[in-house]
Length: 79
Image 1: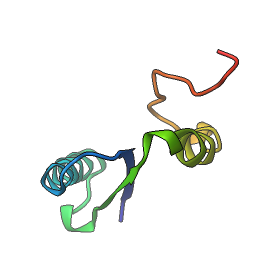
Image 2: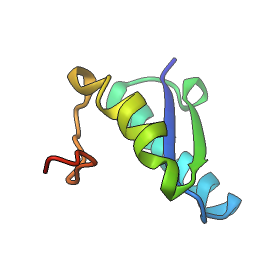
Image 3: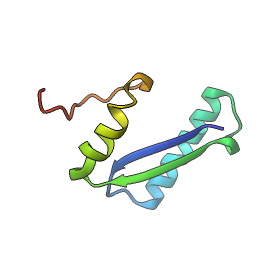
């Protein structure tokens, strides 16, 4: 029962989000060997000015040990 949560900047249409979710569900089903009906995908909009506090600090930094694909950017003021 894979569940995926995507957070992205605001501005995508519901159609774009639905297409993205369906493609991700297909890839997960094929890659992890589960039924596509077992996959759920949530897409949440985050305002750009809230990205560091809402996503970087709460999800990327705290879950770093679980990241299989790290971002190619940093929100660290020291870098």
